[in-house]
Image 1 (cartoon, helix red, strand yellow):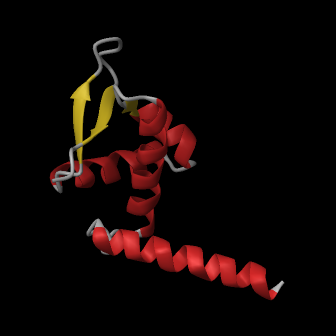
Image 2: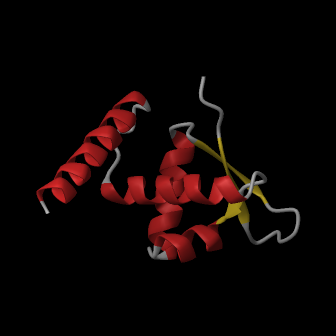
Image 3: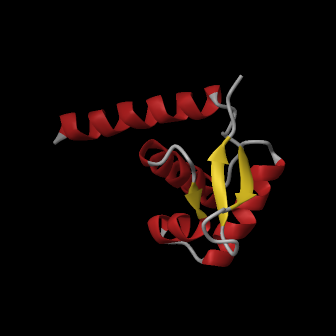
Length: 98
């Protein structure tokens, strides 16, 4: 059991290091959850995910996700643009990291 907890500790230390390197240590828990959900969805869909998918996959309310997406957009982490398939939806695309 001690090895199990050590493995979790190692994984968390690696995650904290990655968050520091990506300059996202200041994110709130909600922002991190939405950001990680976008990352996971982006691995499956290069064209971007819509807000409905992020809400469904994050387990958070639509209003919380929407507010968080606006903040991530303001910080230049994501780009929101209107879906060509459904004008009521916005697509979320990660901005390139330089």
